[in-house]
Length: 96
Image (cartoon, rainbow, N blue to C red; front, side, top):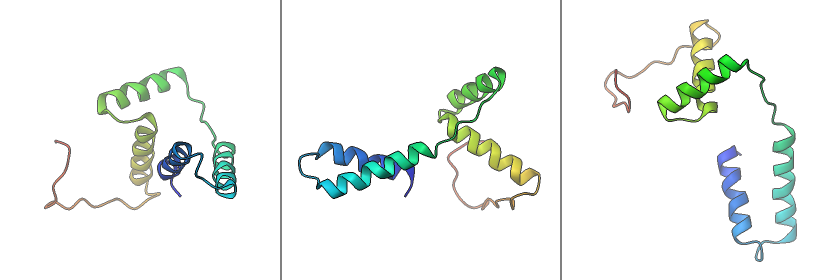
């Protein structure tokens, strides 16, 4: 289960708190506790933190998405991941 879909489940349960069964509520709360317990933050230098926040604002995406993009591209560049091939015929959302 992805975080966004799980967040939607939590919001849905909150919206219908009177209708949700106790066992279902317990399951959702245990999943939330497990996810929170497994979240590990990464400490960054202030300059790196500022740069990430600036890039995220410029790209109009979240900070975590910028980190994912940078990490994936670094892994591809250094041959830890196969390079993704872009279909030249396909439409893209960005500009060159």
